[in-house]
Length: 72
Image (cartoon, rainbow, N blue to C red):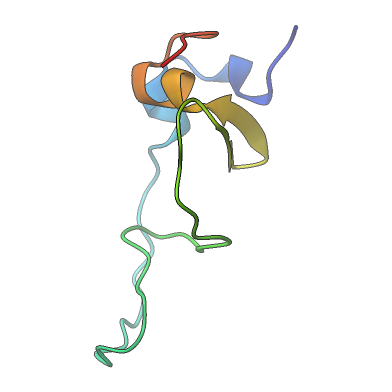
């Protein structure tokens, strides 16, 4: 199976890019993304559920280890 991220040299390179300068709202009632990104959902993760990141589905095990089909 071919993944969208196969053309990157490493798992880390897939998530690394230059951060754009941006305004951060100081309002303590607002949630701020910890990176140059958008938060599209907030949910409790239980077990080895799938996560959608950059239009790619990962199991929690794969996301945390970088190893395909790694189960938690």
